[in-house]
Every structure is written in C-alpha cells, then in structure tokens.
Image 1 (cartoon, rainbow, N blue to C red):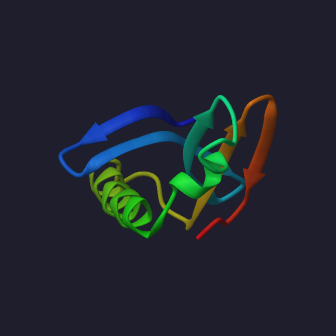
Image 2: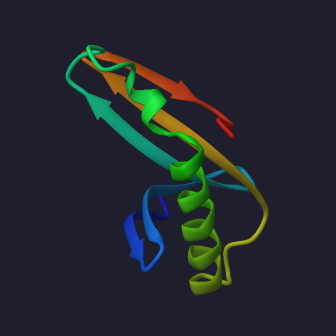
Length: 88
C-alpha cells in the first residue's frame, strides 16, 4: 500500500497501491445489504470523475510515483466482496 484515505479539495482516494509498475487507485464501497442496489452501483459517473480529479492531484503531490494507472473498485455488499479490476 502506498497511501490510504488521501484527501484533497477535489475528494478522497480510499487506497493507492502498486501492482508491478501500475499505480492503482482503489475506491471501496460497502453496504449492509443490496436493498438499495449493490455497492458497486454507488461508483457512478459523477463519482468516477471526482476520483479521476483526486488521482491527478495525488500524482501532482507524489511526483515520484509514475507508471501506468488503473482504477479498481472493491464493492462489499453484506458479506459478499467483489473486486472489479480496471473498473473504469
């Protein structure tokens, strides 16, 4: 893990990790049940845009971390955990 709960004016990044030479920005969403839809559904286009902006700001603040970029989602609905690699 490179960073956790990183905040800036544009938003927050839950996790920043490295997968080989790829910098991975991870959004974690959890819901107790799927009554209002699965947790992954909460990462809509608006949220994705905010995460991209935050990722750019993170990269500006951490110039030593370069390489390919990827956005993953970890969606927890009840006791089910789903990892969506390269979610968007």
